[in-house]
Image (cartoon, rainbow, N blue to C red; front, side):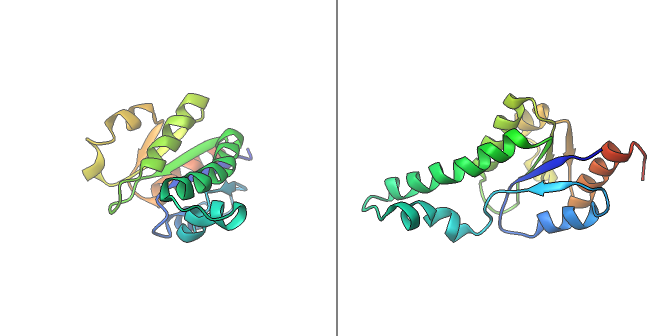
Length: 148
């Protein structure tokens, strides 16, 4: 089985690399948002011109990033959404909701201290993982149908 897995959410750590390493050999295709925070924030004005108002600066970037994000979510067979420890990840929550609305299988990845805050998001997920390695084990089971 060949799957496309969209790795959404937190961009301040290397969790995506950890998932990809742990899932090596499964033939999975991984996609992700732009993880260069500055590029993601400034893409709109860098491409379409400066804005005096920060709202419109951010809006231009958000609209360009949405092209990639929506396309990747719609093309994904499975969506993994990581909620990190440090920042409020509104984008991650939006991606999880969008994936659920599309009917995409959803795996959330977050520490136990976020359980209460993410209870509705987790209720829409097929699995809640605590580590990138757990995510990879889930994907391995889905692809191979075997337990580790």
